[in-house]
Length: 198
Image (tube, rainbow, N blue to C red; front, side):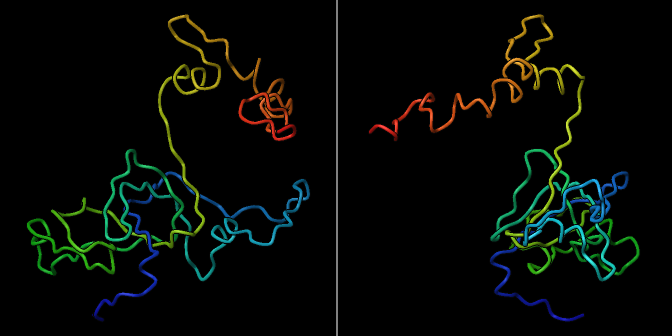
């Protein structure tokens, strides 16, 4: 096995630790849809992440923690991220039957991006490495009742019967939102200096 080596590029690397979500799949974006206006931008960073070639599969993985600049950070809530490939094993499992149940060796910094480790990573976690400037997709899944996940956040509905009356339908984007300019910079209605007169 070749000796792991550090790279100057590691200073910008983010390591994601998680597992592929088997019941969610992602497909490359539709590029030749006649009913869709063409995108004329030149960068298309996210589209490129969704069109990786060379036989690399695109997955969605639930990420539990990440490392950056030698530090290991737990996510406050696991989130789903776009990843490429099936990930890499984190720890070196001894090639002795049954010994993997007793002891596992800490991984190399080239694998995890961290210099020390207290205990072991959860069994079956994989690791993916990206540059901190790479584009990605993050999905935060929320569960609960419709009152909690839809009515409350979108309309201000209170299940106890004390609605706030501040839903989007009466003061949202369609009637009193961004298009009215009531809070725009040019009107000065939101406080601060009036740059047109000072």
